[in-house]
Image 1 (spheres, helix red, strand yellow):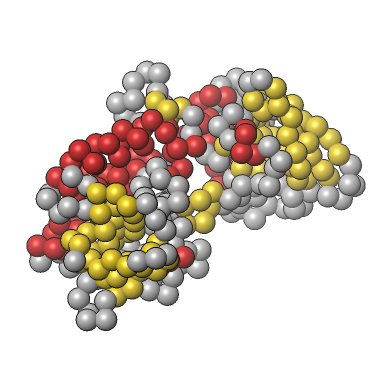
Image 2 (cartoon, helix red, strand yellow; image 1 turned 180 degrees about the horizontal axis):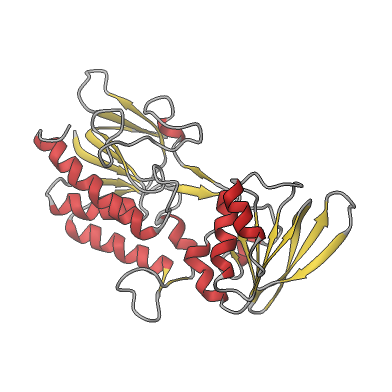
Length: 309
């Protein structure tokens, strides 16, 4: 039986791997279908402490974190987890993969969340080159430039307000005729002279050049007219979905699928811990996910020693 299985290999999972390996728990990390998580699709990470003034490539950062975890003694297994269940004996947990299963005393779920994106024709090519799902992560690159935000909830209002501090102009695009965001957030956006609002409009295509995104093709859903908007960046703030289907019905979670945690990273199931974007729908930053991974590792160690709840 394993002492600890870590599901996910993003900042939360790899930090948990480093800490549990240093604690001689011999962690087994199941890397998942996207080893390294969302940061592997980020070109430059400038807000990671210690990355230096030039920042660091997101994929390179995750490779270094994995190498560090392996050096400490963590083991890695490529595969997809389909279910985590309590063991029939009542002691420990069973992690079920496509073609095998693993018995373990504890599990750390660190599979992150996936940003919901628009089905744009050149989305994959332009992600990181004009298309983004995180203003806090990428807004710095658009100082003095024109950007657009798609969405109508609180997240979209926050993204637009944040970008208005950096960009020359922000266009907020929403496919309905009214926002669903809180009244306070709406008023803040509408009062900002740098933010232009387009209702009843959706983005249907992009324009690009050698540097990346150069404009948007939009459709007015009322008049059916098509128009173009020159922008350097498009931020898609239409939500996230946590990657937690494999523990649905096993652990307590909210209606969006985010795992409920108490007293740190403890879940409703003894021995099952959750860290990072699977339980954090507020900050969703690499550094906060790493911090939660550290916390989960320390709490796993205490749990195994019999001093955690």
